[in-house]
Length: 85
Image (tube, rainbow, N blue to C red; front, side, top):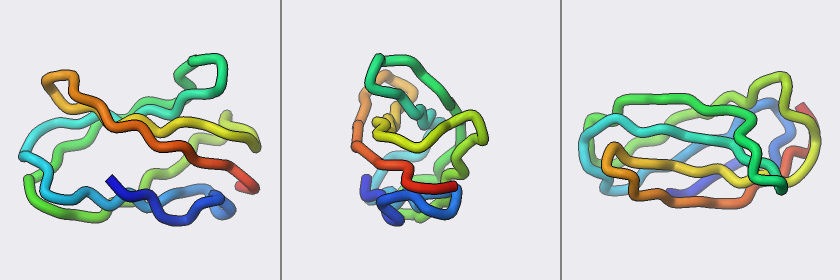
């Protein structure tokens, strides 16, 4: 998983999925205290794809973790910084 548009300045990040299996995935945004501020589900057809992730209005400027989780619980986490929405 690669994330583009860091720091976030326009309300979304681009998530690049590389060689992932077909399935339902969740994407979560987590603050430094471990609180989940946003969680979205999406269906991936398999392989590689790019998709925008729009940041909810309740998320404020700061550092967060973006966590991609598979149906079987495997997770990939990347740090992002919200500079401006």
